[in-house]
Structures are given as C-alpha cells and as structure tokens.
Length: 320
Image 1: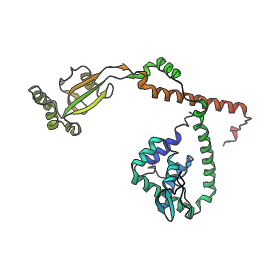
Image 2: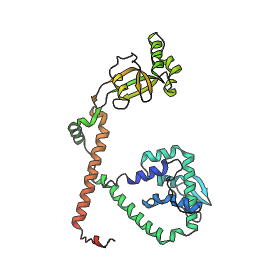
Image 3: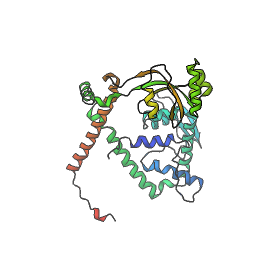
Image 4: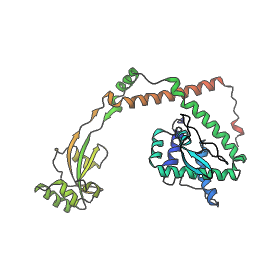
C-alpha cells in the first residue's frame, strides 16, 4: 500500500543488522572485488540513501561541535577525517533503535564506516559519480529523500492525540488489549517415557526438582538453572504441555508429557489468567496506534487533494 513510513528505517536496519554489513545476495556477474562490493551497496543507494560517511578526494578542516570546538576524529582514511559530528549527522537519519544497536557494536560499526569511506573514495577515483547511470540514480534519490521529508513532517501538522481520544479508542477496542494467560514454569526434558517415569518417581520420592533437572534434563540451558524456563503464555507452547500448565496445581509436578522436543515433566510456580490491560499500562501503545492511523489518513488525504488539484494526463498505452 502506501506504507512509505517505515521503508527507509527497514533499509537502514538491514544494512546494519546483517552479519557482514551488506545484503547477502550478489549479482552473478564476473567482477573484481571492488566492483562486487559496490554492487552489494546498490540496493541501499537505489532507495535514495546517502552513504554513511560523506567523503571527498582531499582533506577538509576538522568539523566543529555545536559548542564551536573541533569534533573528535574517530578515523582518518587516506587523509579524510571521519568525525563524531559526521557520525551523529547520519545517525539522526536512523530509527533510534537501529542507531543504538549500531553503536553497541562499536568496533564493527567503525569498521563499516571505514569500509564505506574506502569504497566511496575508490568510486570517486574511477569517476563513477560522473556516469549517466549514477547521475540518474542520484536524481531519483534526491526526489525520494525530499518526498520522505514531506511524509515525516505529517505528524507535525496533525498533532498528537489527546487523552480523551486515547481513552475513547481504548474503551472501543478492549479486545485488542487483552493480557493472555501466562505461567512461570520449570521443566525437565527426557529422551524417553521410561526415563520420564523414573524421573517422576525420584521427584515423588522427595528429590529436589532443581537438582534432578540439573542432573537429568537434556535441555542443558534450563537444566543449569534447575529447570527454570521462565514465563510462557497461552499459545506459545505445545498443546499437550499447555493443557498441563494451565490446569496443574501450583507447585505440583505433571505426569510425563510427550512433546516434539521430548518427554517433559513440568511444574508451575506462578500463574496469571486472561485479563484486560489497564489503560495506563497500554497508554503509549494506544497513542502510537492512533498516531499511525492519523498519519495514514493525512497521507491519503494529501494525495487525494494533490490529485484533485493537479492537471494530469497519462498515456499507459505508450508503456511498451
């Protein structure tokens, strides 16, 4: 549809999230290493995104911080300085969560900046920026960035929802704000029913659930924690296991249960039934839902207005 709102954030997320820093698929053509790396960057450029670091053939004066002092240099690539101010400029274009994730992996993030700078400098050295193909893509990229800026400013024009609107939406959509039944469980997972029966015998003979889980469970991660798996919600686990979880008395071990993961013995230490979330618990979610719907309506209304006011003639038959 017109889901332009999250397009750029998703592209940036893919760029940072993949382990090697670039999209995995490559064009099956015979190219040298530099050309192949540049080809990998094409999907990012094609969506109208600027390179992560602006580059130039010759060094420039150090960038200034907002207080007037020089911005710290974090890398120098062939005489070209990459500063914190330049990084901040580009991080501002990212969704907050993506920028935080990128900075948490600082060395990898810095390596990507240097790699991008090297590739950009090489592209300039080969005068690829002057080719008609690149110029055409840059013109399209500029259009995309300006359009995105228009869309990003829609919330400023429509304003945030007020308390009355949020409360009204919450009351009219209570089914959307249900807390699913949940339980805090511990498990022991065995290979066979025979082992499960033997284990249950130990437990009913007075053995500690935690000690038996550490010794016998084939799920080593939970076994090391004495069988503690944490909180599960209705609909998240095997149906046979779920029946036991939401019917067992608190603190009592279940009979052995066959599941795709093996034979399991489960114990419930805490349980919460289905319930409505209170308004204050979901207030931020309600605000986001209403804001998103308003943005979409404003976006559609703007498009309808522009179409109505424009003088447009199309010739689809000429597209051959």
